[in-house]
Amino acid sequence: MTEGAIVSPFETVKVKMQSDRSGKGDKKPKSLASVAREIIKKDGYGKQGLLRGLDATLARDGLWNLLYFGIYHNLKPLIPIKEGKSQPPVTLRFLLGFTASALASIADIPFDVVKSRIQGPQPSTGRIYHGVFQTMSLVVKNEGILALYAGMVPKRMYY
Image 1 (tube, helix red, strand yellow):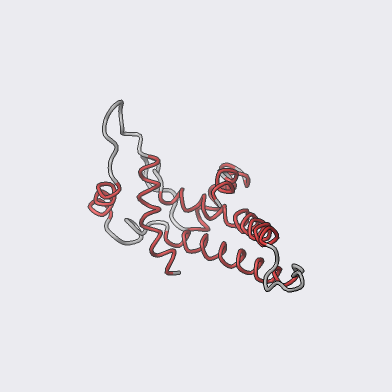
Image 2: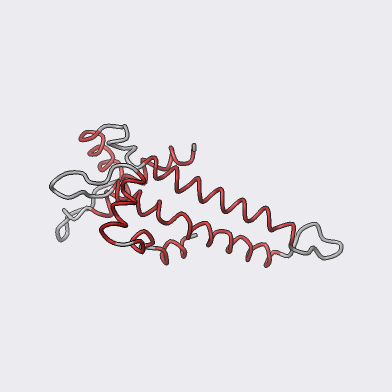
């Protein structure tokens, strides 16, 4: 939970910077601090401002940690240890970590998509993405279930 609370403001700023289409030509890009100040000035610090998408960030990070550590630590004892060694071979631990990370990422990507929708630009008619499950159901209704898995390949390359 602490991780999500610390990461969420940076995620909000990151999504805002990634989706900002106001830069033209050689205009200098805005800094992290200036974008954060803009968000705070316009929407404040709370869940409508810098902490927008906190619930989705907590769900994403919580699910990933639950699955990654649950899979890794439950399967690690099943890896054979060579005689005279205290740990399984590094290659097998790496493969287990990679697999646990991949499975956790596949499971949490819908919450990552929802987080970005909540934090990102909204239609000029007003904000349509509010809560985690409201956003999830709206995305599925309007774009189909696969829209919740947008960006899965780049995310998998990151983890």
